Image (cartoon, one colour):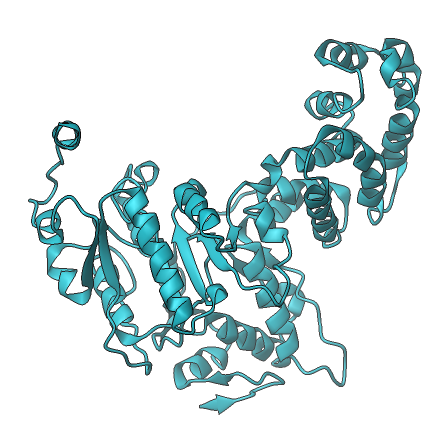
Length: 480
């Protein structure tokens, strides 16, 4: 193992070190889950910079904002702090946010689309390929199952994940009678694992989409099992977040009547008709009070002052604070759970601090919104134990001791909405747990259990490929 090439303390295995120290020629790193991608890329960036590369010409892209922040932090901390300050890496972020910046800067020209499978052939000579296949997260039986499923992909860079973490425990494939049986099974297993010494926050329940956990959440509440959920309500769909963003949008663009309409409805006594008349007026904003209902007369001047201040402002820092100062009294009048909502606005203000301008903030927030309110909310108190619920997307890069996956059935995984083409099915195969992706010859790689099933697991899996269940007959059987 190679330790601390720079100021970092994490070890690099030989293939990671080969990727880190590769010269300036094109390089493609093929890496499986849990193989140390983040650590490798952080050291790679540090190696390039210390070898003379301009940090401003390094492009570092990830899928999620959380991963981008981790990547930048690790890359920066890996660089030596002396004799000069650590350089910033300005072109680091999510695909969406970086694409937004590039489009703002170069709207007139768009390059060709990327395809990672074709990447090596874009260069002459072709890009060098390094495969990271040693997994540090999972045991070998889990990797055996993963390798077998991924190996069925029609197109991919072939890799064979391996681990030094040995175990006789195979992943468990459970056939449940219905969602209630599934929820009961998971709750019992979660409690049993806790009794065996695995804290709740070392266990996670993953789902393809957030609503798949609805019944489980009810059961967890009934059993008084605390949990935190990530990947639920989209951040911009929360009413109080919409309100604040619309204030900023209206200040940014006075012609944005949709944003202005929502802002005006925040005022007491202002309904849709009044809001439309106010927007249709050609007078300066502060002179439109004649079109404002009497109930809103006291609130009108402060709103006009806020919008005017925001439009005249040349500096972005502090603007969201002004909006919150005006908005929070209305928040208390309009909504319940005020303390929770204020916490969300505090996190929104923290997010805003990472942007240089109001326009940049609004653009990135629209094109690359946080996955959920919970993505920005703080963790529970340090002395609390809590189960993790998360969408599969929000779980990327995370790790737990015990993981349960909900609704591993066709229509949910893979999603009906993501199987319209061969390419979409292959994308599901790479990023989601599997159902139709587990043919009969792979079943020996799993332990199999049942949870209140109507038929045995062998019957379920021995049904001819592509055959359909007669739901009507099953319902008649249940109710006869």
